[in-house]
Image 1 (cartoon, rainbow, N blue to C red):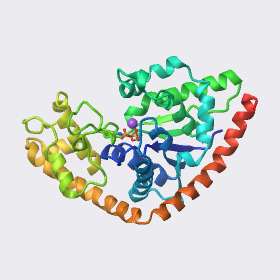
Image 2: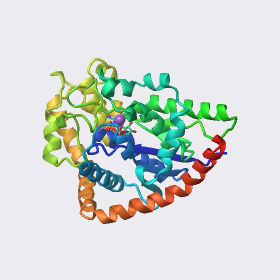
Image 3: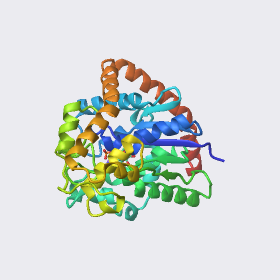
Image 4: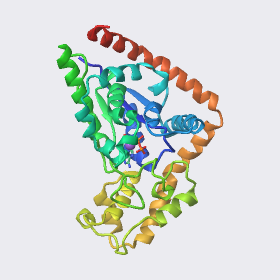
Length: 333
Ligand code: ADP
Ligand code: NA
């Protein structure tokens, strides 16, 4: 009964990373090109300000993220490309969901615990409420599927809990139980400096990540200096079990090349990490250079990016306004 619809978002809280690209954006392009679902992709600036952002930097990062989507293959005609704060229904539904979600649910979120750390008293209220806003982002479109990286799995479960409780409390079947889609070898790209930590655009150590805007020399240097052990590459995946840093590089190679981990190891078995890192850098530059140069071209005309986002917001509101109106009616407003 629900229109097949894909929604996903990325925070403009820094530059796009290889993790965002492999874990999220390449999947977004696949869904768009498959053509089985309506596709809506969002720059979630309201999420970004749950931690402090310098205003001019936020505005720059939002446009640059839009340029990244476009350069990677999102077509603003076939997909709705939208900035969250330009569609007020996201925040309006989030308030309703703040009143549906329970404090205990929010306190259990591992991302909240990680980001707030030991100083939860000093964290913003928005950081705690982040997953309710995310549920609103998804459900304001009645999205049926959400492609995401592995780190967002728990937030998708919470989205389903909120939909279930809303439907139950008001005796309706209004919100769908959205399916997470977490697929491929790169659902969790790890830091180049610590294979047990996720690569993130908000990591203060720049060398921990590949940014889509890094030039060829920077990409080669970051891979060369990536943390690894001195042993050669194993012949099969089981040989990577206790080697998270090496496994991460192999996974990245597999995702970028489109070959499976087994095929990559069969080809590279016994090779030295130094050589492998060079091959990996060459492959990454080959795949990312066209994207970064297209991003630079698009960023030279910010007014055009703003026009694309304004059009995206108008298209988005055709979906979100009726869903919010019906929600208010259900709630008695
Ligand atoms: P970040 O942590 O880099 O700020 P976001 O929170 O904006 O990223 O997440 C945007 C999307 O990118 C989400 O679907 C998330 O799961 C995915 N993602 C983020 N980091 C990674 C990663 N290291 N590996 C795979 N997917 C990732
Ligand atoms: Na994240």
